[in-house]
Length: 205
Image (cartoon, rainbow, N blue to C red; front, side, top):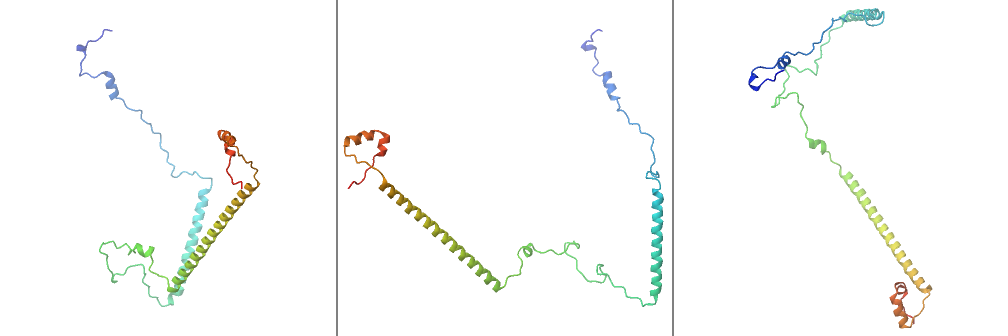
């Protein structure tokens, strides 16, 4: 197939592939025949008959109740008619009232948040004095407990210090020592770390 040159191509002519894409349509869904199930008997056999019988019984009982109520009304017809009491929920036409400035008649009057958080009801003088006395008693008991704990710690520290002093004194009494009077021996021992640690000055009198 001979190659087409650049001057042989028409820029205004659309290729056949673009035309095929323009004419493409997706596959359409084919709807089947519609089935009417409004009057279909899909329940078990005899379920409609049972429901119908139950409805008939309910209608009969309702009719009997209405007839009995009518008979009672006829028997009570000799009584004087009672005045109808006005309903408290309904608003009377002649009742005087007011409309809020905002026009929102359905809103109930609100309360301040401070009334809920800080009620105005105060305690009596006797109750205040009782609370003050109980608080003072608690503070006194707390102070006594703190002082007792301090005294106990001080006594334990003093006892521990005395025991440590007695232990040191007893160790010094029972310790075996050797008196070194030669200065050259002391100089030799000072050169050795272990022997230097053994040297100690003490009153030999």
